[in-house]
Each structure stands twice: as structure tokens, then as C-alpha cells.
Length: 461
Image (cartoon, rainbow, N blue to C red; front, side, top):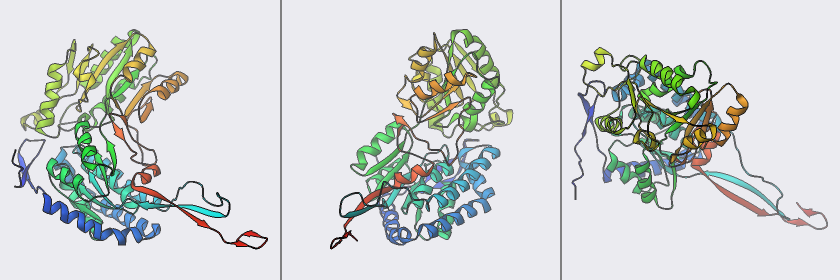
């Protein structure tokens, strides 16, 4: 049996490859203590009126805004993201807590009232209890907010485990949550994959997991009959038709290199028709070629991801391979920098097509007609995001409707807001992030029916 490490793990700066600090690895005792403390905090937090929970969540949003520079520094330390990216994401985090502060006061329920003769009925939406939240390294703070904000708004307490490589900003969020929400309403649990397994197997009432498909399957197996919400990544197609808008190539390059392509819904597979294939390859090669790693986007997050990315690129059977550059300053730092890359003319079963690459890379494939392009788009197990690019809105809307994806865009990609739901299908998992619909991820309905006394000759009271 392989020994499970208990000593603090080293944190590596992905920009330089150098050790930047250490983080604790929580084990059975720490997990049990965190869950127990969260359980103790549950009655007080869930008993608050929606108005009071909203007030406290709004205060947490204010603390995020007040300390935005500190959050930004912590995010950059763990991810290497450019300052502009982290600033925008922190703004979204504050907005999410504000959004769910309002959503906590908005009740949606099935029909209630006089539904059965002589009875009155209604539905109570109750919190699940203690929610174990496990978030990935690509958006350490933002993904925590996606999961924690609706769970807290619904009246749950949360034990949140960050990725081993990016614990920094979630620790600060937990400190601010203790001030704004109350002690142990949001607990921070640092650790590695073993910590995550222990959290799933602990006494939590629900698990919300964002990560790889393999890890998601393991979570489901360990969680048993408890509710699990999964977001397991994507492999998003972008169907580019001959009449695509003039800014298509630049827009796709922006979306493919944002966060170094380490976004579950980022465009990954461009699909063209024969008549616009060469134009698309040339246009995307130029657009991707103008994006410089270290200037326009950050590094890959860790050595394992860099090695996986390199192996996928090396194993590709693409006939054409275009790579941009790396900023000289970034290249000298020996971090996990990878250039923007375009692979064209790939076999249909190429690993760079069938697997989620999760890096600053686009592939381009050719289809003989629109129906074949749609079949290619829907031809992988993942089904999280997708886009269509055409100025023919009738055809575009028809294709969007037939794409197998939880979120689809027409003439744009990666456009998201707190009001709109996000979730996957198939190998991309199940469940809903964002929007008021996410509240129901973290609630369970209880139907209450009361027999109404009858008054003589006058029916029920």
C-alpha cells in the first residue's frame, strides 16, 4: 500500500517553477473536525431569515471588494494569471455573492393551495445540510464562489477544499466569511486528493465537485446515495460557417487563450466546411499567433498538467501545427509556459480532438456539409459548451438548438453572467451552476399537507 503523505506540500509558482511556500494536508482528524464544526454552525445559519442571510452574504461581497488587491495577489501566486484576468474574476466573485444574497429572498416552488379536497398543501424548500465543496485549480476563487454562494444562500453550511496547488484565495475567503457570516459557516479545508476523498466519505450531506471526469466518477462511487453535483469539464466545439462574422477568428483566439485555455467551456474544436476551411485555418493561425504567452495569458498551472498537455500535442496526427511565441521574460523564468497553438487537418479520432486538452490550443477539422459538422460537434462524450458562427441567424439558431451542450453561444463564446445557468450533460456531469436555478442544487423540497376541519354546511375553513 502506498504511504499517504501527511507533511505539508510544497506550493510551486507556475510562472517560475520555484517553490513559493507550503500548504497543510488535512487528514482524518482535520476533516472530521471541519465537518463537525460546520454541522454545529448549521442550525444557527439555516434558521436565519432569508433577509438576514442576504444581509450577511452582501457583507461578504463587500469584504471581497475591499480586499480585491489582496485576493488578486493570492490568485496570481497560485495560477500565474495576468492581473487583468484576476481583477475581472474577483469582480465576478463579489457579484455572485451579491446575486445570491438577492436570490435567497426569492422563493420558487411548485403549486400550493387547495389541491386535494378538504386539504391545504404547500412546499418547504429546506437546505441539504453540510455541503462538501471541492474546487479545481483553474479558477480557485471563482469556482469556489460558483459553488459556495448558492449553497450558503440556500441555508447550508459549507466545508470547502481547494486544489492542492491553489489554496491561497479560498483561505482568505473563509476568513472573511467568518467575519461576515459567522464562525464555521464556511470552513476552509486545505489538502490534496486524499483530503478530497476523505471529505466525500465524511458525514457531509451533499458533495459539489468540479474537476476531471475520472475524479468525478470516484466521487460518485464514494458518495453513495447522497446528492452529488458534478461539473466535469468539456471539449467545446465551435462550428465556423462560410458566412461567419468578420471578428470570428479574433474572438475564438481570445476565448481559447483566456486563462491559458484552462477553462472547461473554452472553445477547443473548430469545425469548418470545405469551402471555408483554408480561410479559417489561415485566420485562426494569424489570430492565435498574435497571442503571446507571458504577455497576453498565463502559464499552465502545474507540472502534471504541462506534461499531459505536451503528451497530447506530441501524439497528435495533425498535418499542420502552428505555434506562437512565449514572452522572453516568461521563458527565462522556467515556469509552465506554453505558446498558443493551432493544429489543423487532424484524424477524427485524434487524441487532441477526443480528449479535453485544457491548454491554449485550437484544433481545426473539416466537414463535407453542415449536418456532418453538427455530427462532429456532438461526436465526443463531453457536452458542456459549444458555439456556432454565422451571420445567418435562422440557420445559427437551428444549429444551436441541435447542439448537445448545456450552454451554447451564437457568434460569441464564454459569455456568462450570474443570471444564466451553466451545466453539463453526458461526460461533462450534471447539475446547475449560476442563476436562481442553482439554489435548488442545494435544497430539498418537503411537501406539507394539512387536513382542514369542516364547518357544518359550509365546507372547509
